[in-house]
Length: 395
Image 1: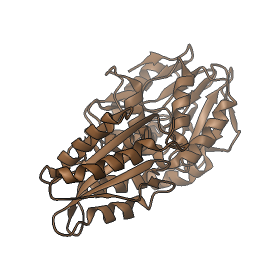
Image 2 (image 1 turned 60 degrees about the vertical axis):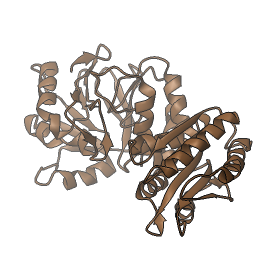
Image 3 (image 1 turned 180 degrees about the horizontal axis):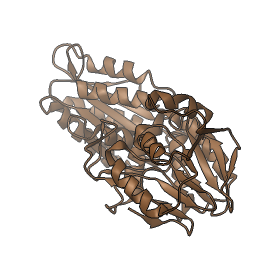
């Protein structure tokens, strides 16, 4: 796909609608885009490459835009293969082109491209470094751990464009029109969710810039209402909930725990919970479950006991939350067991690994199936979940 971003900046990225799993783990029903840009000035800079899966299409786009001209620079903002996988190929086609990257990225380049000679062909840049293209200057800001240590972003002060690396990206190929927020949230929480502090540091740097356009490495170019996108990134990276709702996430073997979770959701609604989302962890996309846990301010987990532990779909979910830095939420626990309930203890141990959670001390234990005598305990847990007015739970 070729399209103008500005008079001098051209999008040359490609859609990948053949991919089933991004990073071999995230379901992408609408594919993904690998974004790359060309800045046509007195000197020419290519902004990142694409995944090797789509290298030939990208090279065709690049050749079509360049015509008889030759690129002077390849700016590498992020070395992950979905963005940097075609570096060796494009270097071979344009042997006079120099690679511009952070000093950490330059050290890592040989790890990915064994046999490629980088001697004399790299320019290392630091925080605040610049590169003149003649009519405009590129300004570089380091963005370590957003979400790799070598990442940097680039600001074109002439067109007021921020090339934001993986920041502000989303799942979904550009040929599919869809709302930005859900797939952007799922992308951010699961790719960058652990790295809120580095994202906050980058947002502070961006706040000092006059930005009119954001060009990410995945998803659409953002040209309007930038405050909306930046505001969401501030919320996500500071681990604030977007909604004072409740996620009821359950893992059920034979359906009894599912019935308990649905009853509990009804109790929450009857008590005035603003939003209640119920997810079956055995069947829903794990990345959606994780992003919903971050979106909502409160969560209740319900699971069956299994092998003196907890049913594996719940174990996987809670481990994913820990890995992504789940924090600043109020959580309740419902366990089910027939002879020696163990799910509650196992879930509590997993949740205790997360920082700064408010976990309701009194868990609810159900023996095999829900009975009328179990309802008061569920009512009490619902009160504990929705009545809290502390800063982290109140929107």
